[in-house]
Image (tube, rainbow over all chains, first blue to last red; front, side, top):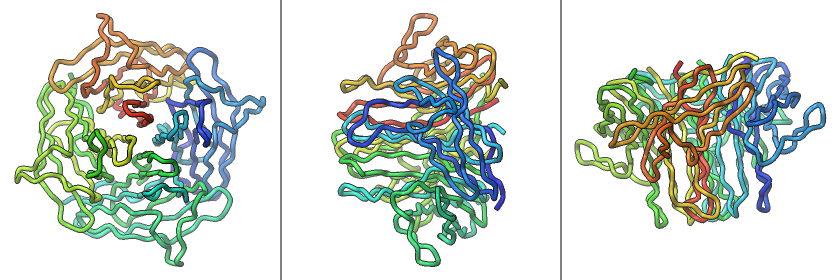
Length: 122
Length: 122
Length: 122
Length: 122
């Protein structure tokens, strides 16, 4: 199967809400790899008032999807994604993939959902 | 009427929630075919930890839309879309069409909605 | 001010829900015209099992936006948008504009929102 | 780090709802600047029946994101964003950035969320 998509994707609006009802609020960086090679996904986080955080790495296998849960991932330095601050994500893959961002927010009694394709660069 | 759109579209974040209130949770792969020829739509599903499933086929007539309900479609092998697991969708058409993905989730008392254009390739 | 955007846009997932709580369910085809000329917006509606409906026309003035309410618009033949059936929309403008589609659904007690840029063609 | 994105982005559907529950309804124009230079972000607002408003300016630092809150920003003339009227936004940056628009509406008891990448021009 052909490699479809791009290697660099950007998500300007990310937010990990610490408030939840019975289901945790969470964000997913959803990757689709249609190719016959595994993809290594590297994420860099950008903030409003502090330096970026590097080294959030995940794998999306050949012919697989990976809905990377941003509330569970840890960086190489064992850091987690900060809660309750606006951030943004640069997603880089070593082979072309497709990236979609989804947020499920359960801060209030009923959940709210939003999604968008990330912005593809090259 | 001209053919508008692309033949290959990707959706990285799909999820068929088994939980529902009085209205079933469901996803739609919405196809618009502005041309004078019928379009055959073939979907391949990708998962996190098992091989892809092929052979989910639908038609979108000439000058018609088809909001393909992923909770109702069956593959050629009479398989249904698995519930409660992250998946992704490759949508292929034999003529150019436009594809938009929408999810209506009613797992909690009140519904949540999300939508995005699929990612067009060629 | 320059003309920005495209002349042809497509929305594959439209749905005019007849159910509402105290605020009516509605969809908007939101047009932004940054140029110094008025834009004439012509919409064609596509359905799953009947011929398309033509002649839904609106204006978006020079340097103006128009959030066209699909629950209020009438065609040249005085037709309204059908309720409770899946449909899709071809949006054509005589000059370049930008088109975004938003749905506010209040079928249940609490509203749900979704939005996406329409798919630009040329 | 490379400059990624575009300098001109458009959002056709903006709306600042005056109604809120315990959390204020608000919109964010989310900017991601991956480069090593600060970006100056200038927004022009377009309306349905009055002239555009200019001069809403914000900064997005080098290697930073800025989720610009449209309910808080003031123009150079100390104007705020009008409430309860449809509007649209032209976002211009002096260097390439990525722009995503998100609305959190709490007019009813439970919040609703929607997001989309803005439309990139050049």
